[in-house]
Length: 604
Image (tube, rainbow, N blue to C red):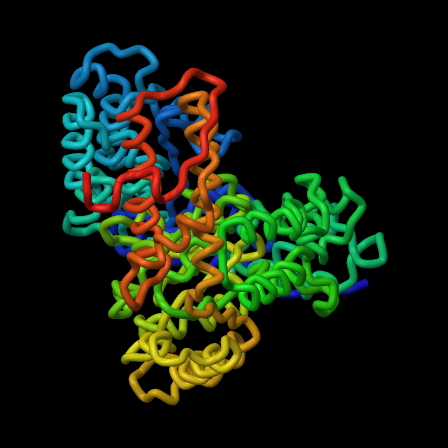
């Protein structure tokens, strides 16, 4: 049997730092990864208990009280309740003299009562005490008169805190420790006071996860052999769970027994706990269903649609070829949509969002033209602790909290500062935000769009004997390769980024005449159906005639947007005006309308 070692008795690294700061006479504001279990001598314990233990061991503070809006003020150690009651009793006369006979007010959770009790405790000089306020933003962050008064009382209490002889010699200040989540004006006001130190608590590192897992293995935790885990099982799981809290590790290990799966397969456990299959959201919806939606709305792009089908087919399953004991965290699929403007790239992204997320608004669009600096890119992850917007999260982190997400980096080649972030996403498939939370891209579909290959006059090739689609897309891909691989010399891209994206290129052709005919046909179909629903009147529009009319009125250089505008001007508006001028026939009627039956465009 493996002997217990010093590394198994590890204590969370921030606990001793908190105790040392209190020992030096500081009040504390804690930010970051809070409200979790922590390690004390290798054993996961509730965080407030861990803080109390560290203060006792290193700062000589035996009495630690915890305040929260839900529970009021109480002694942390349940075995010390009698001692705490006696301690409170000695303060009662002072309390009544200053605040009136408030009965059990010392245990009351209202802001005023917590602040009053905290003030009495910090001012007393009988023995060192520390008060941990777990939800200071909620308790003292309200705009009410009571909230403002309570915050003022708390600030006075901090300034009046006594220095008390410590058991080991010297003096220690009665300390206030406030959690900085949720953030708000109250926490910022406390943090700005002289004598207050901020401590950022990080998620457990690998050594802490390893020590915690070794303790968990003594009571619950299935190994790969179905029984007690081997050391290699424990070390493997510690490496797979970067960003996990100790509480999440405990839940994971319990789940391994509940579902009779090794804890070293966290991805399978997660899916089993949610009754999920090995399919991704793409697989659950079905590749054919997604492709049917695309083929209905995207015209003149057979090569692009075939490439998208390939990507979706690969992305419908969790990768089974990954190394044993590794997690599946990378995106379901990655697509680089390149081509001229107005040919269907944005529409493709919207259709994918509707198919995977249920509505088109499920799309997360990131305009990379706005990401000019590292600071701009950092906004995608949310502000770090201590900065405005810290509690709001970022565009990417919020998207990854959904069951499935379609994330579009629009004109991604416009943001040189984005290169490192993209490499991290494509390699690790994980993202740690400003709050220290780690999320994965396992249920995300990434779409990168660019018209780089058609800039600088390239779009005019359609007017002068346009080349075949294959030659055109090859030319666009060549220009894109120079940019993504870093050969352009303007600070964007790298060979590593190109190696990860070159297999994901989806080229869009210019719109040709057959695409225009298909777009007119689709517009006529929609108009017939919608007018039948609105008016109960059936129309039969002359598809070929209107297609010729639209093409005749288009100038050189048309794209999908100009075609849509011309369809509106040439077909929909004249047809509606005809129905309004002539009156809508009785419900159930029908008529055939061609270009000669409506007013000339511009004549109304």
